[in-house]
Length: 146
Image (cartoon, rainbow, N blue to C red; front, side, top):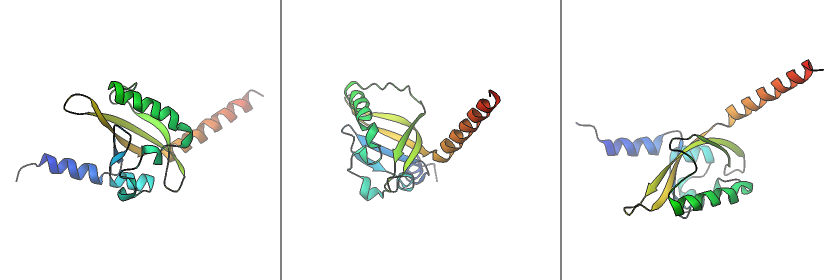
């Protein structure tokens, strides 16, 4: 029995613990894996066909859509390939979380942008720990300077 690359890709993407989300050129969710269900709290049946707004905090939506629409129109992103981005996101229960992610642009057969896939990881715990450490360091420095 040989290696089945297609099956490997399908199983890996569907079952990995990181969220894998694909949105079409209009920003409508077309793929939502188990990791996305775990991180964001929406079942695939709830997320598919919905706008990415279900995970974007309201105060960040305008900036997100300006960048998304520009990327769809030009085929270019301001983020270099492989760049690890960090942003706040929201869960189904309205809890705000921190996620790190990379994006993969998808082009149609004519080379036009068809959509974007993102692989996301919840880093809320690490973000909170880092914020606490920074605060402790700042307080320590302030105390030394008195």
